[in-house]
Image 1 (cartoon, rainbow, N blue to C red):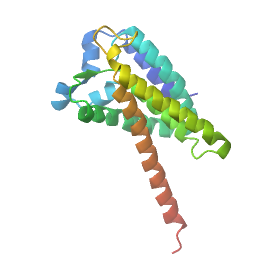
Image 2: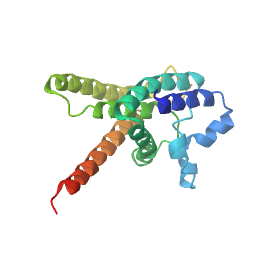
Image 3: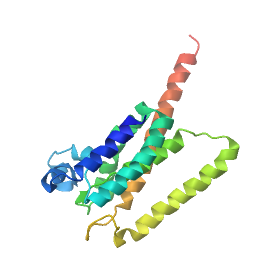
Image 4: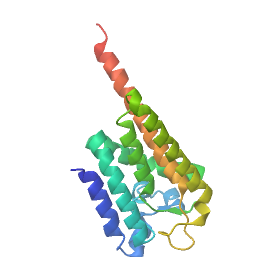
Length: 196
């Protein structure tokens, strides 16, 4: 059972009914992070702008997170969440200086999808074409999100727009974590295999 994905999704749903004062303590708030409230780099992914926003993100994350946790294993899934969440926040800090607040689990859902993909890489040749096609669709979706981001979303209140950059950062963070992990595992294998 993918308990981490289930627990995180249920936490988001429960927090959707929390008072706004609680949610504002969890959100990515650029000013408060600058004053040392670093926990917001992690907690912003649990807070949402509406119950519909939380429900949509929780369902999406549950599906993709459960897949990633089963395929990559709980340890790698938890590592991706623990490292990916602040990387996304720091990336937003650098790439979107105009962004004052951010809430949502969708960037980590993109991270989970990327982790599930990496768990099967490299693939047999007959699967590679399908994987490349899926990758092209993911890239197209990211570009469409970025192009139409100002249009808003049915799950977000008026005046709040989706932050497509966070989705891209979710993908890039997981790719970076995965490459570092493979590099470390490869060098460790090389050290144990070398003659003395």
